[in-house]
Length: 126
Image (cartoon, rainbow, N blue to C red; front, side, top):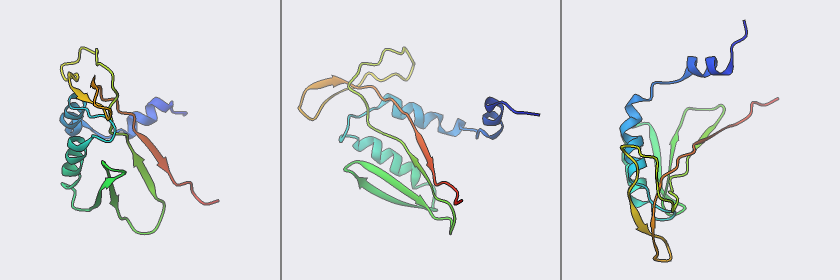
């Protein structure tokens, strides 16, 4: 029996319900590049709830990195941009951003948070 990719994804998909409020908070409160101070603090606070993580802040000014040590073996990197775009959100979502902020040149812009997570895994040795 051959499984379709959607069936495989569904079989291993974790329950992310507990992250819904965090997602909506970050979506509603975006910040432009190099100004993600509140976003960074929120991420750091949430990561600190997991005692197993070693957390490094101020990565590239406002970034956060967390390391989960698990002994020898493959390394997995998860990365997500946390900056927003200077675009007005018109999604109509209940948690849509209505935020405006000054960019680095001091010009006020509407701000929309777009999240595109990326996952990179270390290939197995051949």
